Length: 328
Ligand code: XMP
Image 1 (cartoon, protein in one colour):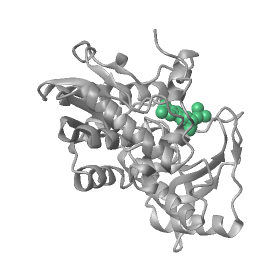
Image 2: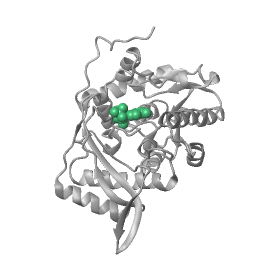
Image 3: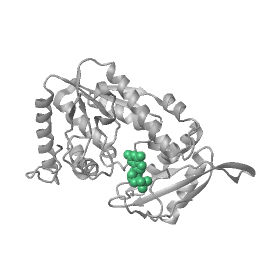
Image 4: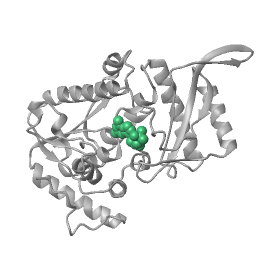
């Protein structure tokens, strides 16, 4: 039976000192659990798996192997940052898998949102399992499971990402879950204590299927690139505007239709780019962030000028309900 209460003596981590003490405790616990064994981690670059990686690098160094799968639906600069932080700076054993073509080829022509999610999730597991099979003597599987995942799976809301989705021959791995008793804000403080960069620690939520759900309908490489470029501009501008740590989630969507425009006296026929910026405490209800009109003008100007294929920029003013956060 899974323990569904945080330990009674668990102090809420609210200060850098408590975060540091937690790190030391978990490093010792991981060493005791792993001994001289080998451990594998799927490292997405999100805060949870990054914190787990940093704890285990401290605990067991090269006995940890991280696998970073680039499925082609990551944000601009993300794979490069994972390699820089973990391989170059922390000296981790990191396997980078460029699976972009494999994912995008499988997704070609697929329009149904749930089918897209299934292809992305299923292919991810296939790629990760293939990498695991190339390695000898792995006994442990590390995961960035956090406390809300456990509560949600207990309440039947969602199955938290665990070994259950993995093929039979990987099911016998023993799990290592150093942040499983933490809430998100605590994970972030622990990430700070471990010296991870702020843009990794204070990262906004990002869905597993990545930019795939922001390229509605059948994903094409050119439209996906328009999503990635406009997202990068939005993130850079929100940073400059001082909104990066304040707004819960902000992103762009490029839907699969075109409209007429005019540039330098010539007719264009291109996609619109939709901006969405929302606030929430628990994502069941969200409100829309209202931006300064001059800031909006600036966003429109940059996106139109810099992103190929876009001739119109729209702002989504719809709260949840009735709209969900993502478009698929
Ligand atoms: P919705 O669109 O359901 O989004 O209002 C609520 C929050 O969940 C994120 N989201 C996902 N996260 N896999 C994820 O890991 C998914 O398939 C997924 N779909 C939505 C969304 O970004 C928002 O923060």
